[in-house]
Image (tube, rainbow, N blue to C red):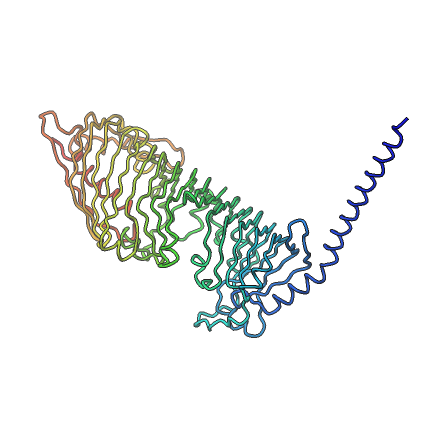
Length: 548
C-alpha cells in the first residue's frame, strides 16, 4: 500500500534532476553563445594591430568561452601577409610568404590572474586542429637589407607557459614558382610539445625562445616533384623523438618519370639516371644548440638501412666538356650549409650500375650487393678541415660473387686521397654482364684467386700497385651484326690476343708473378667513381697483357 507514495517521490526527484540538468544546459549554452560577441570583440581588439614577424595579420570567424575546459575556442583562424602600410616594406624582403588556415583552436584553462599580475600567460594546453599551411614565392622579393622591424605591434606578453601544445592533421603545400602547382606536399603532420615555455624576449632566435621537456613530431605522405619533370621524390613518414634525440625517416623513394631510353633523350649530353629507394634513415644525437648558435647542422650518427641504388648512363650521347666534377674534399668545401657528422653507417644495400657503351644498343650492368659502409668525420666547417680526416670502409659482393673490401682516406684540408683494398675468390665469367654488351668480349673461363691494391689520387693523376692472382683465363672477341643480332667471332683478333697479348695466368707456368703498376691521368669532365674505376682497370690491364 506504500509503494505509490515512494514511486511518486522518486518521480519528483527524477523531475528535479531533469530540470536541474536542463537548467545547467541552458546556462552552458547561454554562456557559450552569449559570450561569443564579447569574446570575439576582446580578441579582435587585442590582435587588431598585432603583426606576427612584423608582417602577418591574424583574423578569425568566431570565438567563444568553453565552460567545460575553462578556456576559449577559436574557429576559422587565418594568418595572412599584410601588404599595407609599414608591413609592405618588410614583405618585399621575404623570399617566401605563408598563408595559414586553421579549422579550430582550443585554448584550455587560462590563468587570467597571472596574466593581469605579471604579463605571463599560463595555459593548460592548446589544441590546433587541421591547419593548412601554404608557402609560396614572393613575386616582389628584394634582396636589399631588411629594415628594422617595429616592435610596437607585438603582443604585450613576456612569456607563455603551457602543459601541452598539440597540432593535428596539419597539411603543408609549398609552391616554388608561379605555376600554381604544388611542388612539395606534406600530407599529415602531428606535433605535440610537452611543458613548452615560450620566452618572447628571445623570439629572434626561435630555438632559444622555446624550451620543452618532450617533443612528439611526425609527418607522413611527403611528396616532391622537381620542376624539370624528371623525378618524383616521396617519403612515407618522418618522426622525431625528443627524449632519445632521434629523427627517423622511413620509406624514401627517388623515382625517375622516364625509362632509361627516354630519360637520356631529355638531355643534350650524357646524364646519369638514378632510381633510389631507402628503407629507413635514423639521425641520432642532433645538436640543436650548435644549429641555433652557429647555424651548423651537427649529428653524431646517421644510419641508413637497405638502399637500392640503380644508376644508368647512355654513352651514345656526347660528354659535356663544360662540366668539371669536384673531388670529395673540394665538393664538401663548396657546400654553403655548414655541417658536421661524426659517423654514417650504411647497411644491407645494393648498387646496380648500367651503361650503354658508345655504338652499343644494349646496356651492360654490374652489381654490388650486400653493401656495408662506415664513413667517419664528414663535415665542412673550418675546425673539421684543420683537424679531421674523412675515412670510409666498405665491404660488398662484386657481381654477387667476389667479396670486396675497400678503405678510403680523404684528408679534408687537401685534394689528395688514398684507397686500398682486396678482392676474394670469384669466377671472371661474372663480368660478362658488362663486358659482352659494352666491349664485345665474352669471358669463357677465368678464376681470380685474390687481388690486393693500393693507390693515391690528386686532381690530375693517380698511381699505385696491384697484385692480381688468377688462372685459366680464356675469352672470345666477337662482332655483332646490327641487323640480325647474331654474334660472330673475330678469329684474327682472338688469335693475336691469346697468342701474344694476354696472359692466361698470374703467376705463370714458371711460377713468375707480376705486380702491376696502376696509373691514370684524370679526365676532368668525369667524376670520382670513373676516376677510381679507370685507375683500377689500368692495373688489371697491366697484369693480364704481359705474356709470360
